Image 1: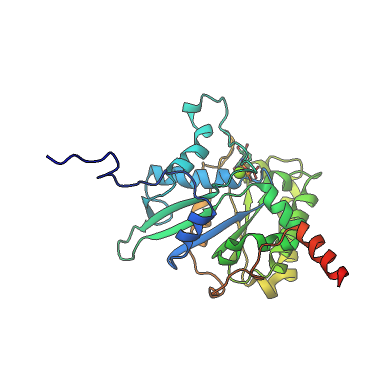
Image 2: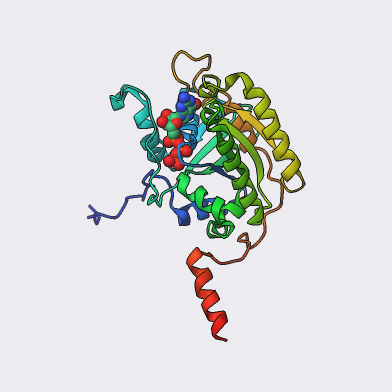
Amino acid sequence: MSTNRSDEGFVPLPSGEALNVDEANQTARSSVTRVVVPAGVAGVGKTTLLSEIYEKYLEGPFAEHRFAYSKTLLGFEQRAHHARVASRRLTPTTLRTPISDTRAFLHLRLAPCSGKLPPRDLLIADWPGEAFREMRDNVQTTWSHPILARADHIAFLVDGESLGHLESRQEASHEADMLIQSVLDGGIKRAAMSVVYTKWDAALAGNGSDQLDEFRSVFEDMLRRKHSGRLGELRFIRTAARPKPGTPFNRGHNLDEVLRCWLGPPRGRLLVNPTPHGVAVREFDNFRFFGQGRQQ
Ligand SMILES: Nc1nc2c(ncn2[C@@H]2O[C@H](COP(=O)(O)OP(=O)(O)OP(=O)(O)O)[C@@H](O)[C@H]2O)c(=O)[nH]1
Ligand SMILES: [Mg+2]
């Protein structure tokens, strides 16, 4: 009888946690993987949107696809847990994505229900709102996230709850406009882009709901006018990933539309070196380079 050493005969299995940047880059190297970045300020609803898409696949086929596999089941479960009865919370919620979290990429393999096409892999970034605040305030920060240049789709999330309230709607729309501007100025040319309104149940319950449609159409016209040359076609989708009980929306409202958008083609071709300037740049580096220049 052979005496196996303890590590013989075992196959290393993925931990199931969300992927770190290196693991994400490895997965993204395959051209059949669609890389998606939901972008928006803290609390806009990025993680809830991803959790609810995952929950839809636990129930069955969704957006003409079936769940086939995920390298990050534990990562999804960790995000979904606090919205479930098992968490013993009185109201379903999502914990804020920690700034220090280095495991920020979720993976889904989806098989088309038709059975005629091969399965497709989605790699989705679940970054904290602070990352996008930095990008909004400093265009160079976009260069320190090379995966943005590889992205097939960037979904800009706009907080519907803020749009529904008279006192917060200007700021929410301005934030989204500035973030789009920064990403475009950062040289991100490949990704198709969309605007996803979140928490549409709360938008309709706000004190400005009677002029909401007018405000939204002015906002959309402004974005199209300002960025259409660089953005190409821009889609707008109203969602309620996790509406409050008693509102006229079901859980996961319009997330099938969001997913169809994510599975669509990018705008541009993938470059060999996708980082616009090839190096990661931080605010601090500006001072360093500035100092060196002055010594010469
Ligand atoms: N009413 C309502 N609330 C929602 C909806 N989607 C998300 N929320 C709530 O919005 C809050 C923030 O959602 P998150 O998903 O944590 O937001 P985030 O963008 O990931 O935030 P950071 O991780 O801090 O960047 C949570 O309390 C959610 O329950 C929705 O469709 N309707
Ligand atoms: Mg989050």
